[in-house]
Image (cartoon, rainbow, N blue to C red; front, side, top):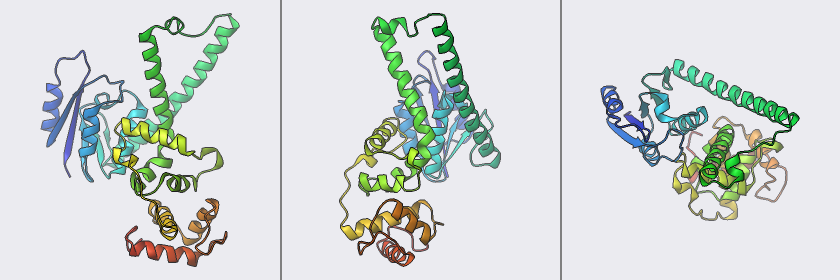
Length: 297
């Protein structure tokens, strides 16, 4: 259970010595230092630090703003750490996800982020309506003139907006991608993800691939998830799907798995549309023998 430090200075700052000293005093066994804008999510040093962290480790920063300048980015990083069984701590902020108080603070931050997004949407709508009523034309003059700097800012803003949107749905797909790729083909993974989701929240394969690529570029997912998967034989495919459902929720009942498979329009090994708990149990027993799930699962 190691403490891994991350220190960042922006491009106009001179030194992160003070951060490094504070992290060292806190007991960090290694410190990753980076010079990058806080608004940028493309930080190779942070990505490497996240890859180094193992179960039980803690990522430590001096202040939250050294890690992220937006709540969505902060919550993305913490979600990845939780997926790895790791923790996050800020020395100068009341956040330590290894403690109940720190987890509560994180929940408050998440609720605040959602509230801020709602306020921004309402203010934007009101501002546009007011401008239209006064006959003003919206838009950025630099964009209308094709200014490269303005176009670059627009691309960055769109990227951040897209990542913010992904953060709101990450719990639906990131754990499955992290656990099942590249062993499971994309089309089968998509069925596992969509199984418990209502119609309006289901994913297409193209949309899922775009989201996964964005998370890989940002360092939230390992590049290995994009690797080519071997095709399962017909029997092994059903075993893998049932094992994936069980792995995502160890307490799921046989009847619930039946309902999930029927919603996914999966046929039983005998080609029937209706699943029985005994058929699911048979596939789970085979999954245990193949070590696709733990013996006690």
